[in-house]
Length: 315
Image (cartoon, rainbow, N blue to C red; front, top):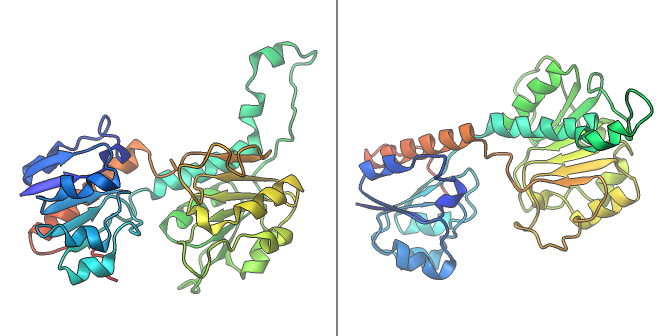
């Protein structure tokens, strides 16, 4: 059996041991695979692992030996699931491996705005001051502040627990009502969340219905002291509207770990916007999360080989 991992750079093999895959068959991994090389590298493989390399209908039709695709991520829009199903190819993904990592990143972002450590981390400037301390930006406590969570899956639930430990008020807006009340959590409609939150954190999937739903109309309803956090999907935000909202001080700040197009162009519309901070889609990528990811990928593969597939994706 031949197993091909098309883009192992996403897992960073220097830190994460991939040798275990060799126990299942002949294993080859490539840092990156451009579209023109997908067929050449996967043509003899029964098993293909992919994180961001696209496997569309045409590609899969040219791979008659292919029986299984393991998506080494939660999002699976890179694979044509309907075509795979028609061709008899099982597709699985990895779920709930990065919840702790992403929740931690959300609060790293929030604390970046509340504590302003980066702005004050200058030994030279402090040494030049006449007083024992100085502050160029207002420092704020999280206690008593309100965080609004849009979506309430595993990640958002962990964010809520951290927020409660900081004595924050937690508002939640989700498509379906909570199964039962949760202490410290208040379920509200979308407008109430926008009007009431000091921090708004996005935790919902990107769909045709909510694309760019965080737009000018939403920004007008937010507090002018509000900070927007996005570790979900870049397409949830209208980036042009966000630039206007930040420059006109309709909201106070934004910290984005995801953008609509990744990697962004050097002249991206948000590149020079004050109080807009961007990290390169790393919220999920702690060493611990990546180890757990590979463990799930391995268990998915074992399940398939034993005739008991798990985390199977259906159209």
